[in-house]
Image 1 (cartoon, helix red, strand yellow):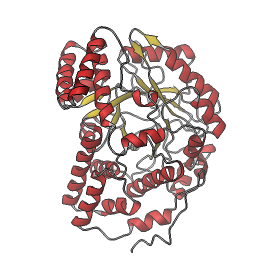
Image 2 (cartoon, rainbow, N blue to C red):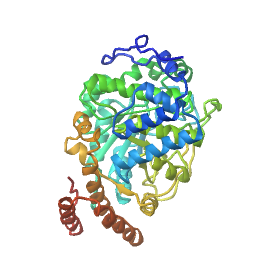
Image 3 (spheres, rainbow, N blue to C red):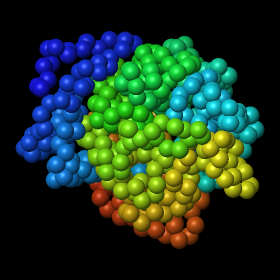
Image 4 (spheres, rainbow, N blue to C red):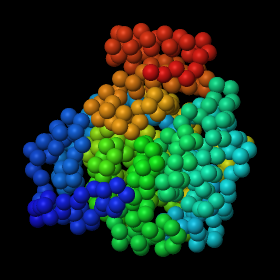
Length: 474
């Protein structure tokens, strides 16, 4: 069946639903592309142009092993062009596990009576952040259950607490949020606290599947969640993150829907998502979903490569749900951000003793328990450039301004020098001597690729860091 654009032409309007399952399914029913078509689409992406739904579907339907490998190679090349070898590091900090929703895939669901409900107090939040700063973290994402106690005012308060914590040379320079959808007024309250990205994942974009998994609570309203980031944009938050939870429905459909969501945000606000996340279903307390939509490691690598080609400018986040070996492999196909030293047990960063994983107290199980230092060292050994950079949002390079820089690929001019500066801080303040030695070698190697003027400016700032200055950026 061929796609007929006239039949499925959807006019995007702010704060109105935009997903048409028939449109997506029809694209996916198109004939398999030949090799020349696949190569043509990859070339378009390498020219830093976002792909259409039809082009994304063509890559999804290209299932011959040699074509899949060409898609992966295209993703490798595109990532190098736009992001270079840098990997942004952050940590999730769970603030509260109360929840009024009943999502069948989540350990925090209201019907799960085994879950231990915890909300951190201000001093506990401070203790957690001090522990994170002691490890060298500069970027956090605060995570909240969807509950009336976690109001916009409460979230804004915890953000201000996070920014206020300073220990030695440690400080948190960017606080992102993963929390419930809000009304426009609520988003405005949170924006005033100085947040970075506001993440809301649709979980599954298929309305019928969504209805099956979300049995009660406000989250059961598919359209309210679907249009939530429109309200964030209307409130002035121009830095948003979208995502789907893979394993709830057909992964090819979800990739198409993520691209459709990107189209919608661009059409209505001239700004696409700052990040896209693609967590896979993992163990959670009393989880019984079956494996009908299980995503294999092979398909997971494939979908990440296709998503990278489909939306070249967007940061892609891979979480510690995935095991170490697979994470290292997937970094090559387009991932630009990972969490490091992750602990999901509330209060566990500051705990003197190691708290064992307990699904009664966690949302899901993680599979990469490496410390931040271990991750930094392994990235350096892979010739990657660990980055704790937060300069864009403080320099106003968000929203449309970010698109101006990132879509053509110019962001690398800022990202490489800023990654080097933040890595230099980490090596000076937190790294073991053997890691510091590896890190400075990687810094010297990356500086060789910079223009002479930038290299000289960077050398001068690196000397200032060695002399005790901090938070220098371009």
